[in-house]
Image 1: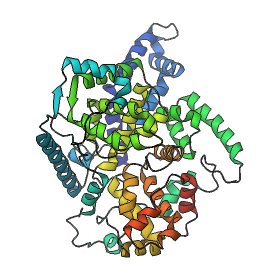
Image 2: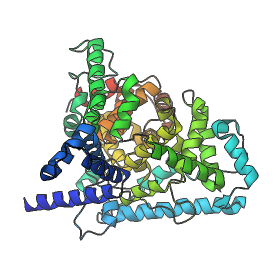
Image 3: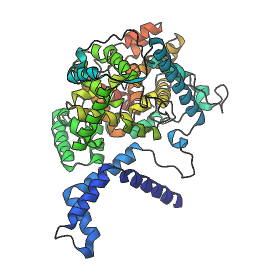
Length: 511
């Protein structure tokens, strides 16, 4: 009991400290002073009257959403005596592996600079600044020569690093998990059994109404949808982040999705946010970074060639170039196993496919400042975990281990067959998970999947869906005799319906 009280006190102190430095805190202070001028505020009941004023004017709800956002994003504070690196990653061997990986990325970046004789950063000449400002909204028409630039790394390079991860405390798989685990990931991590996943994703069960399910259930789909929309409108009217998060677990109506996601992510797009975005844009105009060319290259290689996303090319440049200059992003390194590079590039180094984290959001947000804020929040809450080495349950290592465990446990024949022919399933599914399926699923299906990521505040559903895809194509996969043939069977996921796949795999699987 004493420990619980101590933990609660630490959590409260942590949140208060975070909020004290926020814009909301100064706004609340200003509103409190405003309230003192009102006749209904009495000195003898000052505290209660101000609290009532905040409730009536909606500021109490904004404070609740801010507190909820802090609780959602940041891990619970550890004991004050615990070293700060434990907040980033408690396992020493994971921290070391991440550190080595970062050195390798920086080495690749620096060698590219040396080979091409270009600096990591430079101030743009005035003429170049004017040109960039004039074409800011049509950067997609620009065709810079990027033939000599290459992505710093691709998902398959990262997978090789994860495959070679070992816990030095266990020799030669000297752990029950690993003696029986025949997949590529060889580190013992705690992941959920399917029975635990069923409990966790209970709102996805077969007898619960879902958006994204066409088959008749106990409630006709159109009846459920009409009622769900009405409930969604009520959630938005209440402006409650926690209620919105719970609501999207059953899917978000297309017309309400943009507002619901913004509410869950606590993004409001105030004048100050617009100003901040303009400052980032100004920084892009004034300074040229090496990562700018990497961003251009990535967009050209991925989104520009995608039937769904090529029309958003300009938006992608705007958002990603601003993102590379945003020092507020550095805050997430406090709870990320990664560390910012100590160079002119202090943010996130894009890899092959990075722009696909932004592309689907362009369907929802057409105002660059709002689009930018939504992406930044999605990144610092979720996406960074997909390319960092950590033991976190939503981290890519755990997702890989969960995927392999689900497949080995519930589709053993398929798993062993693919393994025997040299087609380890993770070599196929890794690229889906590392990009949160962006660019692989049809956009309407991807947004239904991302609804659930936001709703459950977890990326574990990516591993479940990856296993469900293999289950769905199991008959064809049992006939293949090589990795190339298996990849061919799973080359096109654009016709898949996400929700039926997840439901069948989770709730119709015999355990």
